Image (cartoon, rainbow, N blue to C red):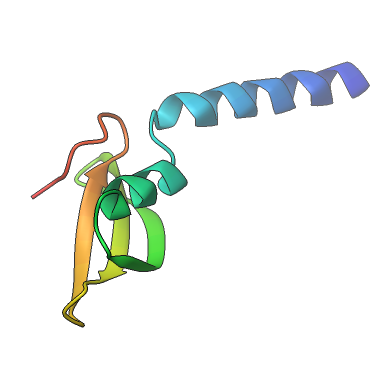
Amino acid sequence: MKNLLKVVLVVLFFSSSCLASISLDEAAQQIIEGTYNKVLGAQTEIIDGKTVHIIKVLTPDGRIRYYKIDAETGQLVN
C-alpha cells in the first residue's frame, strides 16, 4: 500500500509539472519585469482548453490591467 501511494504521488507530481512550463510566479515576474507595475493578484484558469495565467496589475498611472500568459509558451494571449 505504501508503494502504491508513492507511485501515485510521483505520477501526480510529474503530470502537474508537465501541464505548465511557466509557473504562475514566473508569469507575474514576467509582467512586472522592467516596469513599475504592482501585481494585485494572479490565478490560473483553463480557457478554450489552454492553461492561462491571469495577472492583475496596478499600472503606474493608477489603472488596473489584466494580462493573460499562455502557461506552455510564456507568451501574452490576446
